[in-house]
Image (cartoon, rainbow, N blue to C red; front, side, top):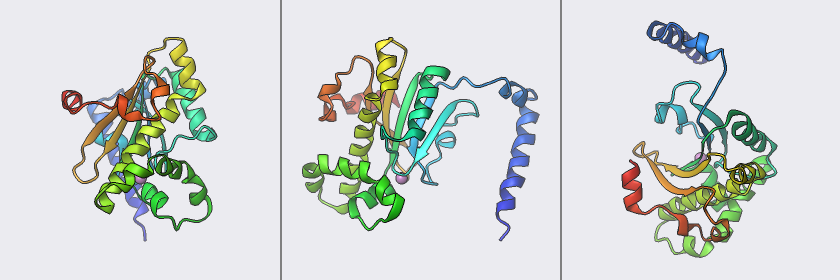
Amino acid sequence: MKNYKQLLLANRAWAIELVEEKPDFFERQAHGQKPEFLWIGCSDSRVSPEQMTMTPPGGMFLHRNIANLVNHDDLNLMSVLQYAVTVLGVKHLIVCGHYGCGGVKAALDGGTTGPVDDWLQTARNVADDHWEELGNQSTPEAKLNRFVEFNVRDQLVNLARTATVQDAFAKKQDLWLHGWVYDIRDGRIKPLMEIDRDTTLEAVPHPRRVLLSQDEIRAAL
Ligand code: CO
């Protein structure tokens, strides 16, 4: 069981290749970071934010947790967010969920224990808030996919309501929030929702109102 050594070998090859292409790459990295994006996504091993957006090192500040939840009591995410927005000055906050999310499914199906069970409460709240529409879905897969989308939207709203984002909006700092879903079946990201400082958050217990139209989604691709 020495598969982990593969990681070290691959890393060596990666670093050598990068230096061959750009001899000063690591020298410049050492001078600091100025990413434009904060990515908040699921910990799922199939969702690889930098790879699937072809973002080089230094391009993206990252936070991942099970089911890409935004909880105001989560010191980990709240400090990542504060640092990204107030110190690094990122311009785009992205909450990206994914179809086939095991965390979201577990929030729906139950059967979890321990810390995972506690953690998923934020996702169960989403299901409670949208139980009627979730119940109308014709198949279990459609229900899960819809739940994944509702979860992204509601977490984006949670994000918009944080003190960090509200302060940035009040100062008219350039900041846009994006809710996306990644499809593990075809590798495509689907934009679902956007929030900026002009979005009326009171409208967002019904976040469908600020959903992108299909034309807008097509124009964004
Ligand atoms: Co997931």
